[in-house]
Length: 93
Image (cartoon, rainbow, N blue to C red; front, side, top):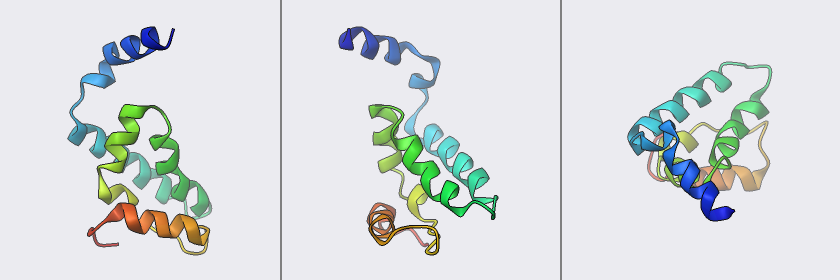
């Protein structure tokens, strides 16, 4: 069953998008979430949610440092801030 699911996932239209395109889509999604100043926690965790969709999306999200460069210190636990800093690599915050 697992093999069938993996095969099915690779045939999905979104699976053929290049990583750069997915990264741009993910970035746009997190920008939209960040606009809601009343819910900073949702903005912080939108990237985590995206990275938990599937293995491919996780690999793309983790390989795109700009996605992790927005920090809300008042809405994130310290361990989450540390992880976002690590994932953002050398990208300006």
